[in-house]
Every structure is written in C-alpha cells, then in structure tokens.
Length: 297
Image 1 (cartoon, rainbow, N blue to C red):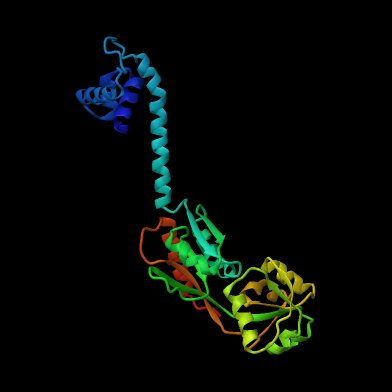
Image 2 (image 1 turned 45 degrees about the vertical axis):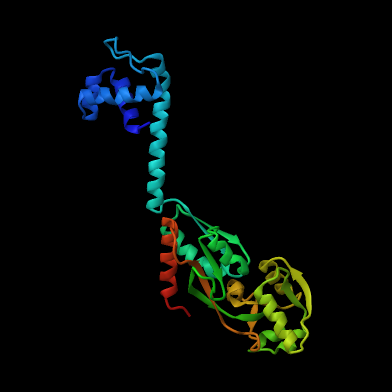
C-alpha cells in the first residue's frame, strides 16, 4: 500500500469530489482516479460510491478512512523520529565502564549533553576485562579501560591519566608525608573493593612479590563506601586519584604516593574501528576526540 494513494483517498473523502481533490493535490483528475482505483484493488473493496454525484464513501471507505488517517500520522511520526536521530536531537549512546573509570568519562558526558541534551548517555557497569567482548558484539558503543586494547577491530584514544595513591584521613600521620613505602602500608588496616579487578590483582601481586603483607580489614562493594570509611578513620585505601578528586579538593581526604605502586596509567575510550555508527555515537566520538586533544594539568 503506497502512502501517496492513501493521501489521494483522504483528499477525495475530504473534498467529496475527484476534481477538487485533483486541484488540491496538484494532479490531474485521471491520475487521481487511477491512484484510487489501485488502492481499491489492493483492498478488494470500492471506497467511493461512483454512482453518487457527491462522491460519498462506501461502507468500506468510511471504515478505511480512520485507518488511513492513522497511517499518515504514524508515517509522519516515523519521519520526524528519523530526522531527529539524524540531527542528533534524540537517540542513545551506550558506554561500558567500571566504577573507577566513570570519573574520567564524566567531563566528556558533560560536554556532549551540553550540545545534545536530547540524547541519552547510558553508562553501564561492565568489568574492564569484558569491555572488548561487549564492543565487538555491538552491545555497547564505547568502553573505558586503563590499557591498550589488543583485540583486532578496536581502536582507542587517551582521555585522561591517573595514578594509584593511598587515601587517608587528613589527620592520619601519613597525610603529612610526600610518600610512604609498601611495608608501611602493610601495617595499616586497608579498606578494599570486594569486586575483582585488574588493579586489585596488580596490587596483591606486588605485595606478594615483595614479601609484604597487605592487611585488608574491610572489603566494601563501592568506591563511595570505601571513601566514606576512610573519612570515618576506619582505615586507608589504595585507589586511583581520579576517584577522589572532589574529596581531595574539599580536604575530606588526603592522597599519599606509594612509589612502588604508583605506575601512572592512561585512561582510554575504546571503540570499534569500522562498522556503522549511529549519528549520536559519531557526535560523542567527535566530542571525545576534541576533549582528548586539549592540554590538561
């Protein structure tokens, strides 16, 4: 069923005349008649009583008129929705990141939403080791990791840098030091994340290799809970500095370097090298590239 034929039928129904419908649509009367005839053949019923001089509709025509109007309304809605996607006025961007990586992503999300407020940015909690698989399966548009992806078909750009630090209460004795040793950290009650991660494994392996003990006294399920526990003087925590930017700026926490663990690292936005991208994803990547090119302290 052609939409143009539906429009012809509605014009005839509204004008109650083939000639007036032709003038309204800017077409010839024979063209209007042929278009309506094709529609009637598809439906298997006459829609206009041609024996009546006022162009009245048949019972089938009266029934079909409401559906025809709804068809054109839905078609118009579909056209507007696709146009809004093209103009990045709607849509969705899916990003996979673990809890720590989200902090590096937020400035890009802020810049993107400032330009495209109608697009939803959905950041899903996904372990770093699963990001590549999710990207290649097209389950997400982007991922955030702290290593260079080795998988073929993936590319990345550096959006931030970070380092592992020891977070303490501002009045903790370590807070007055520039750095502490791993051995000294091992004598403290450490508050850790109970979710396995490459960072956790690296820290545990480093302590094991140097034959130092790590006294994990508390394991918590979120970074916010860990930071709050440190503020309450329940222990210290080894976390990326980026995770506590606000608390450090407000003086609620102190950050101390542990030279043996520091290992600065780059935070990368990962994406598929090829394949179709939505207009929203293209815009998000453009903003991420612009952000990554800016010098930062």
